[in-house]
Length: 134
Image 1: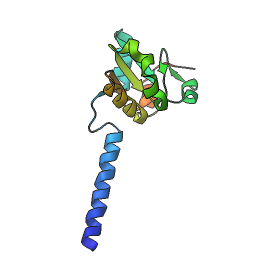
Image 2 (image 1 turned 90 degrees about the vertical axis):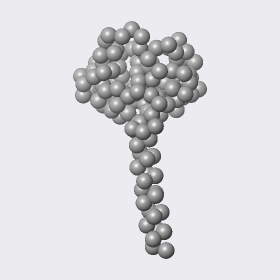
Image 3 (image 1 turned 180 degrees about the vertical axis):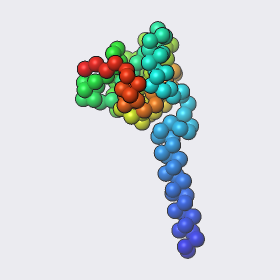
């Protein structure tokens, strides 16, 4: 009996590790993730990008990147039409720390968009000296 308990324990632990890696976009990601510095370079040099903030309205009001469109993750699937003009652009997606933007990037990719997930979210963007406006 103890043998089976140990096997189940290790299977559960492995499942948690796989789930965590999946939620962070480290595995099974069908989209590209970029660093905060890469995001800044793209925003400065590429006219074919859109910036999408998937945080809450309150988080957005506390500070966001200039020209960012706000569509909270919880509302993204119902509001993809707000991005239809950006279908042929790369969409730089960010949240607070990079987890919600992974989920948003998956939704966007499944619907024919080209998302670029910002690893570390606005926390890393601020660390890279991105201009935050209120």
